[in-house]
Length: 268
Image 1 (cartoon, one colour):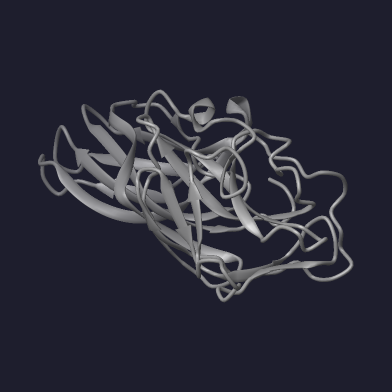
Image 2: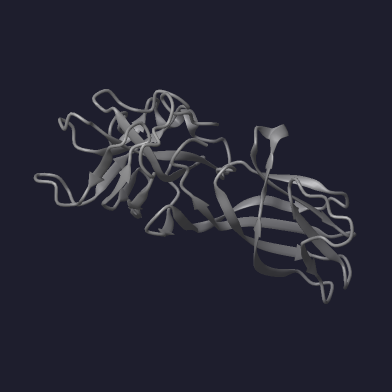
């Protein structure tokens, strides 16, 4: 789903983000460290320095809460997937009047994700939810806009794919507009030695050599990792996607173990 801003972005000064790195997860909580970021709706900077009187050093989002430091505007169940995982933006919210302490929300709708009492916001990261309605833990580094995520458990996107013609694999839980390289884990089971599995970012057409190729030395299953860029699949709602094929009686399974992304400070 696409997420829109409230009115036109404000460009009086440079947009920036520093800090706000996820520290830890439970099934229902996401702890985010201190930081500062320029609001998208004004020239104001929203800060949570970690030493606010009578406030904790970090921001804790509780998915059981509908409101500031929770999910908003709808309950988490509205974006809980039936299988695999789903992604959602995490917004920093602020109040220019100074009455309300800055906080965070996991957006559960494309509009209306700023609770009453707040008039500034900017996206600072991502949250992921599994089919049990639990937050998916990951480790994240990158102090500024560019981030790198590694999941605690790799997420399967293709199970024993056997297409001998080019087929599309959607990675719809990734934010197609802002991701860079994706780290993929594979298991390739060839039918014969010298068989291959090939991959290409969606949107490109290969005529002589696919940019990613896995070649079997023997008719034995092999597992490894590689990194590649992905494309965007307009037919599937502009979600991230790659394309693959195998050369013969082979199968290919793929998992996303992590990815790079740039926080979209304007709008996906």
